[in-house]
Length: 286
Image (cartoon, helix red, strand yellow):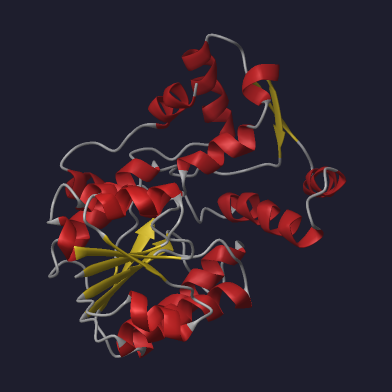
């Protein structure tokens, strides 16, 4: 039994969809906070075991993880101590359930000294995995390409995007990372510990992205640079909490430090093809 947490989220849902093409549905279980969500109901109709599980409720995880041979922990949409605490609870739940392997969706650049808070959280979670006594695989996912689109915001319509100075980032499609996770889950002997960075084939700055977007849309997109403090204040002015604004700024600070610039062939090898290019992601977004 392969258990996938967060299976109604963007990444978790696609991982389960890929698994359904590789293993029988009755070998797949999902742990979700709300089994009534449409995606969870759809999976149940296909024969997937659906159980309620919360990283803040150990009893629910014991039920959701029952009979697990492998548990894939999809990282939570939290930052700081709360994220690490929930991840540790999920790890403890998987160990208690007798899982022989734990997988975790980490991030390229995971390091305790990262400029980006989630990367520090991933590093702390990986330390908990090393200490748990069960073999684990930490999927060092490339930076989600969807985040680049979010930073572009309305720029694709207005023709202007104003962001802090950045550095190259290997923006990587959710679809590719879902395919990779499913491939690793169905090959239990692969990747002991953290994987190499699972990245797209190019590392791009927002100057590069502006040029690509201009080609894709046929409309000029101009990228301008804002001082860090100005960008932060603009976010706060639009209602973003100060702490969240700091974390978003951390993306650019880390990118300038080269934390997300690595391009690695491992993802392409897992997929058996070249990863999806950001130009394709932009076309699909349109």
